[in-house]
Amino acid sequence: MAADAILIVEDDPDDLELIQRALRKARVNNVTAVARDGEEALRLLLDGPDRLESLPLVVFLDIKLPRIDGLEVLTQVRSSTRTKTLPVVILTSSDEQEDLLRSYDLGANSFVRKPIEFAAFQKTVAEVGLYWLLINRNPRPA
Image 1 (cartoon, one colour):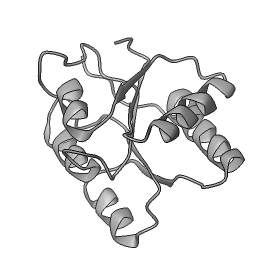
Image 2 (cartoon, one colour):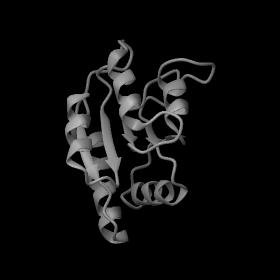
Image 3 (tube, helix red, strand yellow):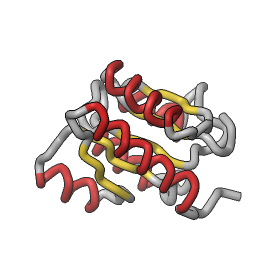
Image 4 (cartoon, rainbow, N blue to C red):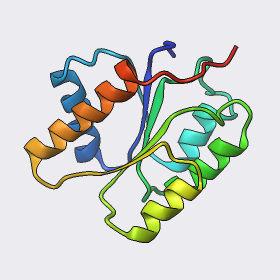
């Protein structure tokens, strides 16, 4: 994976397409990798034959995922020396206060609720993407 890539962990194909379209429309040309469940995300980030050689700049992580939920993915990402400083943005349809609090307790860098209306969804994803890719500075592994 390119060193300036984005990992999107999303099981809903419609939301995935909307995220990718919003990033393209905002002229975010970074390579995107996709994991469709929590187990695949952990294989890409932590271990397994398909582990990414380079970590992405940011992970957009849904909470409600098959196999392993997003909060467990976040827990394991934060417990690994390889990924403990990797920026993780929770991008979810959940509006539950408990999900918000647990996400931050587990080390999320940001919690963003997916707007229901398309234009608002597109604007939100574009702004989040631009912030984490262009403005934010994060430590990179040696």
